[in-house]
Length: 214
Image (cartoon, rainbow, N blue to C red):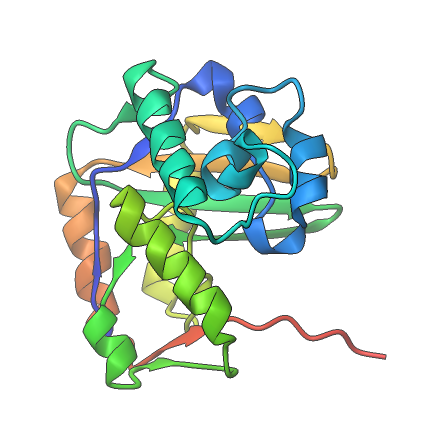
């Protein structure tokens, strides 16, 4: 079985979502992060790559960097840049890249299932990156970026996700890299329970890996 749960998210104020959205922390270096966030005080890079808020040359693993990330996240919440969901929800997130469209659920998953190898790992990870992100989570008391998981297709889950995608989204935007991002919120408790129950029959989740074929 695979356990998933809804959660009470902090999410962007709709009119700021395009400015808040950022690339994953690990696809850019500090210099590139500074350039992307320049002139944009609500870029999420202020949270995910908080060294950009400090003088050049600072050690990105120093105490002051992690503290800067905490301060940036608290500021976003205090100023209403991030809104707190009033109840635990699931979300459907869709990406469009040219003619290719993919969609999935945003939810909580089980750390115990990861430890017991019910969530399948695809590679060895670097300890320095593990330690860095673990400290970000601990210091900010937040999961600021998702883990991309996959599972073998279940028609009933697909049908419910597609049903949600017929409704009005809470976000629908295109980022500078020409990728479309659309998000729907699932707040109906009966639908949440149905989706979570269906995942009880999913034998395993897989940490996704991208392959470049030649």
